[in-house]
Amino acid sequence: MEEGKETKGKLTTEPMIQRTTEEERDRLSELPDFVLLHIMNFIDTKDALRTCILSKRWKDLWKHLTTLSFDQSTSLFDERRVVNFNKFVSQVLSCRDGSILLINVRLVIFESIGSQLLNRIMKYAVLHNVQRLTMNIPFFYGKISTYLDPIIFSCQSLTYLELHNISCWPPLELPKSLQLPALKTLRLTRVLFTATNNVCAEPFTTCNLLNTLVLNDFFLHNDAKILFISNSNLSSLKLENLKIRDTFQHKVVLSTPNLSSLTVCIFGASSLSIQPLSSTCNLSCLEEGTIDIATDISHPVLIGWLQVFTNVKILTLSYETLKLILKDLSNLATMGSQPPCFVKLESLKVVTYLFRVISDEEVNKAVEYLLQNSPLIRVLLSKKLYHGSLLNYLGPVLAGLANHNRSQIGPSLEWDHNHQHHKGGL
Image (cartoon, rainbow, N blue to C red; front, side, top):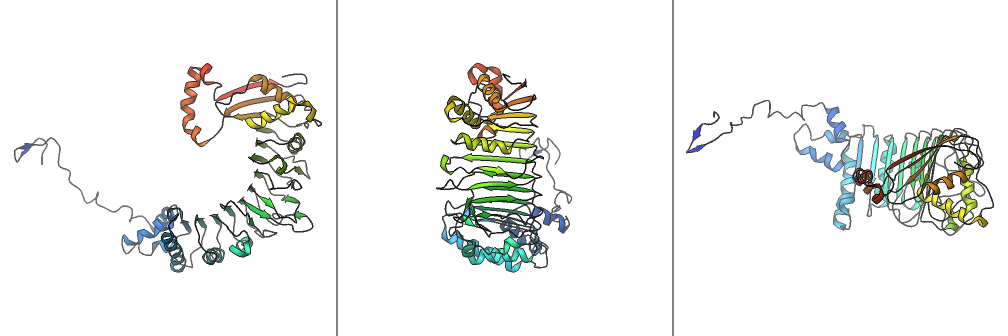
């Protein structure tokens, strides 16, 4: 119909839209199988399997997936849906093409999956040379022998492992030694280490390719007094919630000569449960270090931690850590030991919340104390917005307000000072 032509007593000013053969083509199905499978590997396996109803070509395509992602979050608090979820997982393992390499397995479980099915997944993954495994599972029983087949901890092909025990208690007890020769990245949450000899737990010694290690809320068995992190290849280490429940006899010792990044975080722990941290080597390759203490710890423990960072080039302290140092400075009677000499320090950064005000005087006082035994160096002090999830969204707005009226909002988002440090002041 031509534009503006009258029909049935009505005048239309819009041209008639005619679908051409080109527009009606199914462009997605024209893509080669390997492209479609690449796309399907990024979605949940349940959604990927639903594509089998599209056409005959799609019917068996999902069976060639190299990623299996099972998310039980939609089954929370619904027993019937949990049962259906478990049946679905079992059917996928039975119907998938077993000749296809399995690269990635992801499990997000909030209710019960059953140890039998879980171990079937683990064995299936190992037999198909899985490379990446991520598990968020509530291990209610605490022992590997009770819940999780230890076969996954001797997998020869595994390069990436995330194991998050989302149950509050007990922690998941791991094998004494992890036999993972290809592993490069390891992230563990709420796990329990046991001693391999005498009182020392050494779970990472045989992971010869391990590059990145993240430990969150970990514990030591009663027979272990020391967690010995020994690995000559390790370059990045993050220790979160460095504590032990109901004891102060445990400690963490590092033997990581090639470590380039070290982060230590403590949140909500009793001062009696904080573990001492030390190193058998001087960490001469340490480029970046971060200390974030959101609880009260003793001055000697803090000094012991700082000793580990003596060769760091870039040191980041949280607002809470700085406040802890200032608190110690206000009580000189508790300060029997002095901070170490930071022989390579190039930059000192302070990370704080936008509305937690700390004055120049307080920053300078803490920095002067920290660097009193260090050589003459030029130090960059930065105070930035803490990367919280809510503030990530509000940050740009608050920054604009801060620039418009700093007297009402407080410090700006990014506040840099160059100081020439020397003994006696900044």
